[in-house]
Length: 109
Image (cartoon, rainbow, N blue to C red; front, top):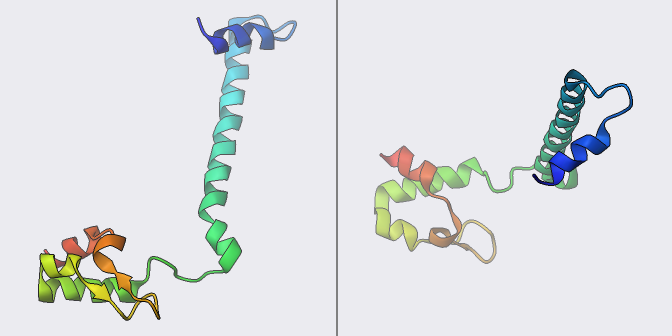
């Protein structure tokens, strides 16, 4: 039947062998697990803010605006072969291989 089925009988406390007591206990365990996972997800999402401060990193609106304008002016093929010298200074950025272009394509359409 599986591991959890065998654990259910181990976790019953004396006097709570009724079906309602087991359901309430498992509802509590599931609730605590949900809170733990939500808290962990929130902490993971806030790691960059806690570590580096409230700085815009990869969601730079100015870069996205320039990328959308470049796509509109030069077309699909040039956009995916574009090497942007103005971002990631001093090295530059190969935009075609380092971007998810969904927002730019939607904006141009």
